[in-house]
Image 1 (cartoon, one colour):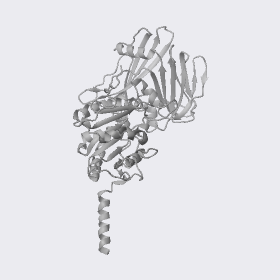
Image 2 (tube, rainbow, N blue to C red):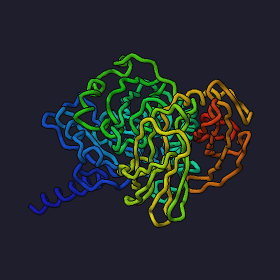
Image 3 (cartoon, rainbow, N blue to C red):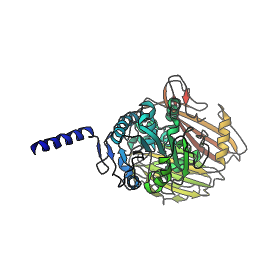
Length: 494
């Protein structure tokens, strides 16, 4: 009897040593490198590949089970599954290395190839694991849900001169967010797509909804609107790869696209489809990632000294405004003063989302606004970093875009609707995700981007309408990356 007990004890010890990394879906998530075996299906079908779920930025494995039945859907449909925790704040290379090591473990545990389901940045981390850290042999297919394969302009905003103050104080600046800037991702795509040897493995899904006024994704959706359809965090064009099977763009936002009830039935057919024969359900060509200027917004931000007043101009013919004042205080109580003296105080306040989690957005929509100089003043009563975003529904948006594209190095330009258009360019050079160094402000042309590294470029456009009586202003923000060969990656915003 003692001998039997010893044998059982040794077997348990060996089992524990072999799979100490594995847990159950109910265990506490958040430890990078730890993975959890999902609940066992009642009727296990070994012909079905195990599913591995990979979370996105600022998230954990609990995203698949906390107010989400994705984990349960895998069980109900007869799939074995695993859920892994990566670094929530690290770039795709560091997460890719960690994930590659764990995919090998998971593959050996199940004994057959895996299908990866990656939400948001989890899809980018997965490709890094396959391409740079040799995880291809363990993976049959990769399904990405709202993944920013080309980055997101919201990351550009967070590292811009106007947007960085608030992102910094909120603790949102990280290697993960830094890596998702559009210029950084353009460089990543250039290298990764050249090295990718199994492009047929990738399947993508995207969302085109971002909720209604006051919703948590409203800030991102409104800012991204001029870049094209988006899910409140990522544009549809960014979620697609030229060589992938870009299946479907549906009415999901960045959160609902990972929900089990809504998504599992949608991608279930792809779990059994051959990677060589799978075809797109919408049969649409990949949308090109927008390189146009987003000339419908004005951005201003910084560190205020207690109460702060900012001004912006509304041109004649503007159909509507969306005004958002973001800071870290729910009780900021900003007031908006129209050119005719009317004061608006009934702003809606809600929690902000990516990339300003932890902040509050105080916002209002105004139809047919009075032309002229508007002001917004914060009454926070303390030193409080802020971000002002004004979105214009105006016929002038397209005209500014056309005029700016034609202006070249000229400091002024006129057109049918514009009497004068001027620009100033502000550039910040980044050594890493935490440190930035202002380079130069130019009133006529862009700075020279010669040094290897990342650059946040903000272009402020100001001018007068053709009548000469109505001023306007807009802001265009992009991140560029200069590689060791001097090649510029990203869209130059001038």
